[in-house]
Image (tube, rainbow, N blue to C red; front, side):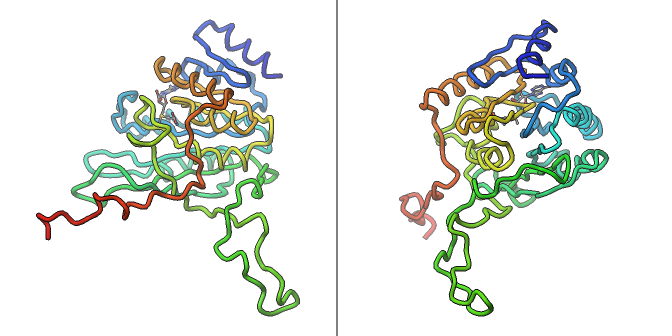
Length: 303
Ligand SMILES: C[S@@+](CC[C@H](N)C(=O)[O-])C[C@H]1O[C@@H](n2cnc3c(N)ncnc32)[C@H](O)[C@@H]1O
């Protein structure tokens, strides 16, 4: 089924307001309803999302962990038949927290993917610098992206996301290639720990959403896991950061979101992406060096 027919199917359910730009659409309705309205046919090249973690953000309703996992399972099971055989799912998660006890959601959700026989390719650690300061445990400064593929025949374009090598001039020092350059002229594999600033108040991408993805984080996934003109789907789209990463790189985007204000901001960002005016921090921009700030000096009171 082609995308236009699928979109028409959802619209015919008359459940929603949809909003679209060229090559993108945000379905303003519950993701389960959107998925139920779609044919069980492979549509998506890449599904990338950060679901609510049920930690009491303004868009979340609190539910017990068991109930939360069942809800996530229903959604992932509905996505699975709609994912292409060459496709990937990237589920970005942190911790569910209850009475000071943490439950890492990658561990809680892994059995869902295992039951679907989806191989885990990487557990990418996204490390960032800012967040709440904990008093009774170490402050949390990373989340993980669980990258699963549907089959072994998955799309992966490593060359599109290589980063500069530390020692590009390094040469083989023995063996048949002795004296030849040992690295790749396109750069090195970005590895599975990514240091990318999270979107806090002074970040250029900051909007009204309390928990945005940095676009640079998703861009790496989009470039390496979805082909040109492929379809990227974010079931919990928020302000469409995945969509910005997709449109910037000539992929199509579908998202679902239930909060009207987020849909409005998301649509604005998608249009700005098409116009070339969207605010964006590339993933390869060097991290801010705080040592040049006066705030990094020890205050007199502490000397
Ligand atoms: C962690 S946020 C995602 C933020 C997003 N990655 C971004 O960069 O803007 C999760 C989003 O899922 C939305 N959401 C919650 N339940 C939903 C549902 N049943 N269907 C669709 N969206 C939902 C929330 O409103 C929230 O914006």
